[in-house]
Length: 492
Ligand code: GLN
Image (cartoon, rainbow, N blue to C red; front, side, top):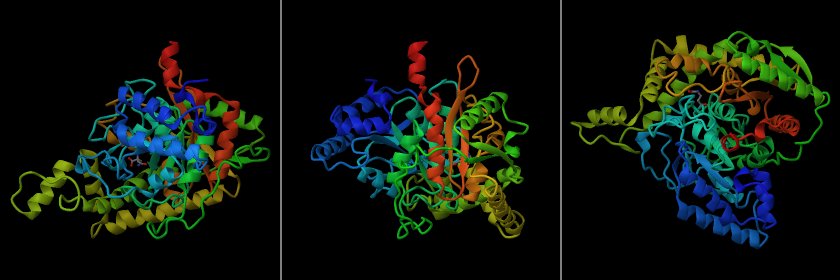
């Protein structure tokens, strides 16, 4: 049998249910790997708490009372609040913060039997594309330690890719599940906005934030998503009032006659040649599976960057006003009066990128600029969603790259943040429209140290099943999702 850490969630649940493996044995195995990790992907773990919940899972497995994911270790991005582990959102502002409750995502996965092994590093308040904005240091890409893992869910992606945990949660506001999944060679899905409750998810931009699973393959994403999704209207008014759904039932549906749209704007200038080649080869695989391709247009693609970088900071400036040194987290040691306390607590507790976005957000919302920036951005946001509606008249789903390139070097874009904003171009449109989208490994770059390449699938509202079906069928014919940097190192 392969090592415990090479097993998929699907295989692990089987091994646990047939008692081939024990829940404590599995938890110990991953804890040992986490304790030896050198990527910076975990911000906290707690052996005692984890073994205790693994023991509880084993009791349920013994009494045939097991949940769907009983005994499966999972790591949570540090923006989900947890009562047993600190929740920092990658910020000094929340250093050591202990929540009195679990986020709905955490509670639902725990109810399904998941064993939490710890909290994962991320860009501060999920703002970033490289994980270099974390107050607790960067995360290294497990394929090449000189590269970024992507962001903001960089810790989640790196940990799954390095086999430190079989599954992790992430959040995606403008690409933060899809882009790190692509950079680290794993599979991730951002469902339709509102499909998963945001309760207990530390807010960045509330009209865009959406949680999702990050795993080795589409089947595992389907398993986790089935446990995570729920209506939660009492606690998150934007969560869709829909019952949970089993996303594993349609995974093997035939792709005969499925129409896939290729947006011309996603294949233009600026797309790395290696990425383009990998996507083109993937298109051939989809054709072998019976899918048909049509060309579609999303003409406002370019505008998604300025629109997102107005709307997201605007919402962030409001959401983050709660971090004032009074109600939560960090308070400056010395200050003269109340205003000075606010000022010093916020300037010392928040990082550069976060402060930049709060200032941008406050500016675009201010009197005199609101109409020119914020209101205009909202109008274009609507047009971006309309582009998708028109495209979905011609096709069942859309395929393109996740990012214009593979993972870039650590520190490479720090001096020029605009270049990292521009790299979000293919993930932002689906976020602004609230559509489900996923990242699927589809190749490796041709560098000396090859880096993973991901393709993006975007579906119409609530078409998660279709996305997972298509991704799963692709993975039955390809091996990219089975590659791991752990094997890569031992075999070289
Ligand atoms: N890279 C984008 C940003 O910096 C997206 C982040 C996210 O999805 N959380 O805002």
